[in-house]
Length: 112
Image (cartoon, rainbow, N blue to C red; front, top):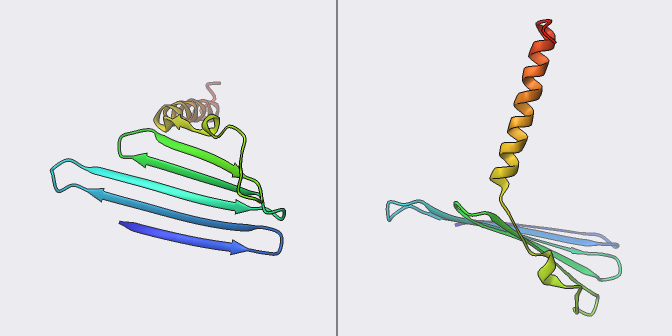
């Protein structure tokens, strides 16, 4: 298991970040999990906490929660929770990149 933490602060805001990851393959099957947590505090004391969790082979889960300076939750926190399949988005971006690369090669060879 690995972990890392960063804290930055000034007179107008505060920021902290931590990340953890773990893996296990003793059963012959690879397993793993990664998580990050970022906390932002603005000059008024309002706090935003962003977390991301992902288990190997599963989509990442991102959550953003906001609190006022008294620590009370703001808004509907369930609506900010989403599951994102980054493999579909990456495949789309890869295809777009390949198409642009092919167009560029065609231009250089005088074909387009």
